[in-house]
Image: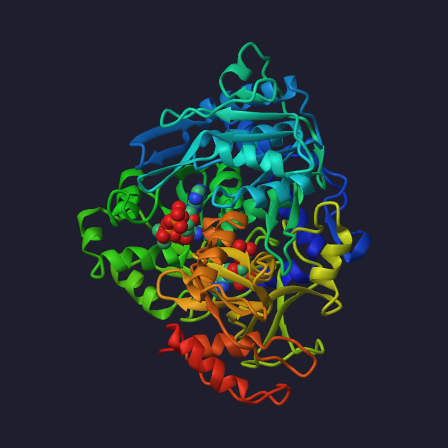
Length: 630
Ligand code: COA
Ligand code: AMP
């Protein structure tokens, strides 16, 4: 079957196509229902099926004789640690850890928050939750305690699992004090906190509440897989929306398993026994789908890398990993390669390594600029494939099918729609647009298996966020166009979401933090192009009448506030005091114009602006502060 026939069947005869894909996984109870409608405009896949994701990721491979194959290669250049963990070993660790969770009362449906660095114990914790039917929510380590507390209050976990520290280049970041602060800030108080003590730092423990990772597993009985309904939540993953409250994206067991296995084999072209590397972090959707669950369900050996692309110890780190583990295919964000190129512009370091195992490289998470593409193409000499997806979908929406029939890629495009996704471009009124016409990128409903169908405890918000702007379509929040051959081009978000180093953040959320400063009358946070990180946020603030604090002092305060409340990952380092902000006559800040000024792009004076004199004035202030110089 070629791409086109595969695609056509996936959207025209969903029951046949996805029913066949479902046959590829081991169900306890095979589903008879394939696609059914649900409340709030959502859908369900395989609703009457029963399975367990941990069983599919581990037990099935051991049962089929793959137990001695490496499941995870842990590689941590900062701590100079390496471990090759077989499927047999990983299953034994997960069974035991799940037993310990069970002994502490964790049951099907209970939530467990995981705030850990890239250590294999994090995967053990995720899989152990899945084994019991408990719902994990992994929070990225770069988030501040306040963000962790917001997630604890929303997910209401019985337990938090953490580690004494993470490693950022050569710095040891103590995680446990951040968790302690989050416990203080949250209204919901989890019963226990399990702490993995790493050799670099010993975390202080709160007696009664805190449990040592090793000690709490002593003497417990192993736990078996708990069969769950296909629609039972496997995890909640919070992602930035346009407000200060992150959205708890819910992923189910059944449709997620079917979609990931399909994606791993058909998009990424990976087979059992292949070596796969998702160079991201378990705190992001990529980490869930293609560091842990996808490659394990597919019987691959997955790299679990606790390092950076550069200074680990040098910018040859990625090439070293590819050679050492004979990586067949990998995923990374363009930022990682921009960082490598900055340190090693000619790619000299790559020449010292044998990269011949690599068949192709996938990139996503942010725009792949043409110069990074050309550089990678020159260094690697294998296909460099841009593809597009988001936390909500959990797997790619546009990509070539490397395991079926790799259609040629096109520069600037994230390729063609993946089977299951009927991608369209619509105008503000929801009318479908033709080739090369720019608009909102949407997908005709229903969405394929694997895509989130709700927000944790808030199905209305899911409907409002994704299903109401353009009735009959899922609203991706991205803008762009399709060419005459159906290739999709993503030009950027149409909302207040920005991507910093491939990390998704909300400018609206940062504005809410800045507004708490008593000197600030109003503010706008905009994304400004950055040569390495893609974009970084910059604050434009209007001060209250009579404020006498120096602008530099205000900037320092705001930088500290964002760091403390959102986290260092926001990379918020610049706040510019301006006299006024440009607004429409109805009072909306013209953020798009501010972005254009910051990036030195041409713009037309909008007819809706309330005061025409403001644009030259603010351009001068922003240019004076170092923005807008092309
Ligand atoms: N735990 C704690 N702190 C973290 C963290 C984590 N997991 N991740 C990032 N941070 C902190 C960093 O230490 C840094 O803090 P600082 O301001 O005190 O220096 C801050 O957050 C910003 O980090 P980052 O954006 O990663 O910038 P950097 O300069 O430290 O590193 C790169 C630059 C390019 C090497 C790094 O951003 C990178 O590897 N990017 C690839 C991103 C990626 O894989 N994204 C995939 C998403 S799918
Ligand atoms: P996240 O949910 O964190 O994975 O971020 C998803 C968002 O990242 C998308 O909605 C896009 O805005 C952006 N994105 C992901 N992949 C790409 C890509 N290949 N090109 C451009 N933007 C992308």
